[in-house]
Length: 491
Ligand code: IFM
Image (cartoon, rainbow, N blue to C red; front, side, top):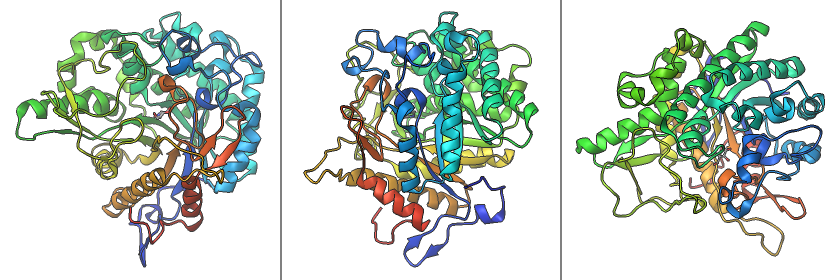
């Protein structure tokens, strides 16, 4: 089975350029990711109760086509076949999340049937020689906790720690890599301030309190798991960006970039790695509710040392305090009004850089990944001796099934290879990166976009649940097998 190797010169060595092919360093993990609510289905089975996403999906206009995760990819019943597909792809590791609402329905006692599903999944992965990479929270808070205030309620952080221990009781003998949270920016600002995600609140202070309490829950869980087993690989996954001023000579644009960096990246990186919120961030948002949420001792808990940082990267941002003449192509999923998720950047405008865009309207900017990884290493993970992984990166495109039954998604293949290339560039520059997870293994429920956006290496026909390996999946299979990028690609 694939294991996580300790940091050695071997795993951080610059990637060798063999002939024209670029090789991954020894020990570099090549995997794929997915999340519970997006693929499992079985929303009302074996004792599972509502999460905030079940409730939010019922709000008229919240999700395109009123889609929901009731069935999704039916992974709950088809997990054996899905793991077989992962084995066929040759994945070293699979990053999945567990559903709090399945394990502690209504936030109550442990539901053994729910836990048993994850136990069987882990066994299946181990039998297939695939390293299980477990994420405890990928946005699906039990609705019962939301009714007590959700993440705006400090107590939720302590309930999260309890849930982490439940999962460790069940799986700690077999799962060695634990991620506390996936993308807390989304589960706080996008969800409690912007209102685009569950629970759909639109309150600046609520987003800030949620962000702080999510961080507190992260720190409490790391402490509790570490106390259980010192050998665990513990970490968190953040979605991060590269924010650049449209015109670096305009102070308004420079300030816009500083704000987005602060309210997207540093709001999480600083407390985790430095045990404080940055002064400029506090000046921008402290009075909006953040200071009230911070209690003595919180930042010590939040900055409890971790072993691994997951970086999720999709695209960079070019920002200004001036409106764009050519705005970005992306748009809100539904007509439901949403507000800026940023607590104090209402005047910031996001400009197109004229790059190709995915079906999400996100610009394809692989070099931003190289730059981001270098910055995070220099300023955060490097000094802390924390290993860095790209835990998500991927693209939605409007796939078509051709007459031969195949999906010739050359745009996704290009995207994948270009981002892997950017990682090798980063490594060559001296930034240690230890693994990559494509998002996602399967097409799935893309939150407020429902089933309209497809990110998978594997196509899912939602009528029949038939799985088809796309051309991008075949390309990734070859990369994993060869441990290098194809010599001929022009990525
Ligand atoms: O589908 C999501 C995932 O749940 C979190 N990161 C971004 C992906 C694409 O939007």
